[in-house]
Length: 314
Image 1: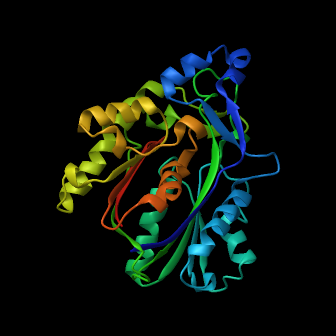
Image 2: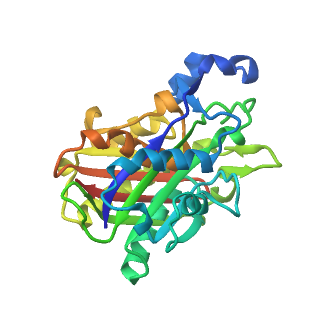
């Protein structure tokens, strides 16, 4: 399948590390040293994943090489819902009069966007869709507990939109070579490692150390698996885009794979952990710089646990 257009939306407001000193006792230096985060993007009170998704969609529209009403599958991917009935997918269908599309919501922690890619791939393979729209967004600030010293300082808000087609539409389309996902709920600490319970503490990460270790294991492992399966080596990889959870995870992976820093694309230092949209967001932010035949890996790890990766050739 092919990427026809991408767009993104990032709220203007930023919260810096100093904000947390009185709330949870963490200094700006400690937060940056442990996470790489200096500021995080924060949506306005009236914004939510539906409104942010619509902004990301509008940002993608000028690039779209066909009429949006040709889309026949819309997926909203997120773990921080604003409305679990009329989701961002349904809002897009209403606003743009996309009358012939299936619309659904998908959630699988921080791998939600990659899982959505795989669902699109499946619909295409079954002949039940030919043009799709994925709307990835998380408004973590709707659920975060800023006083939580373990995870209250991590989160940011953002959205991204990807238009995809079963067949190539233009020569500019990037090819999604393969998508791979895996549920890891059987791991010992998976069920309680990260959770979002709106009436019981919001987003919490009681097992942060285990999350760190598993992310450092599965994110590179999945990329290596896809490279080998598709006849590539690490030397062929142009860019590595990991889930933006912690810069120390990226540093660990860079050391494991012996990849130079310039191959790692990231935004966590400014935007924080933007959740399930983070890797797609980095891709969309950098789409203008990708050259023909660049090979890009997106790889993610999320609570629950869940993991996934995909290879994209421009």
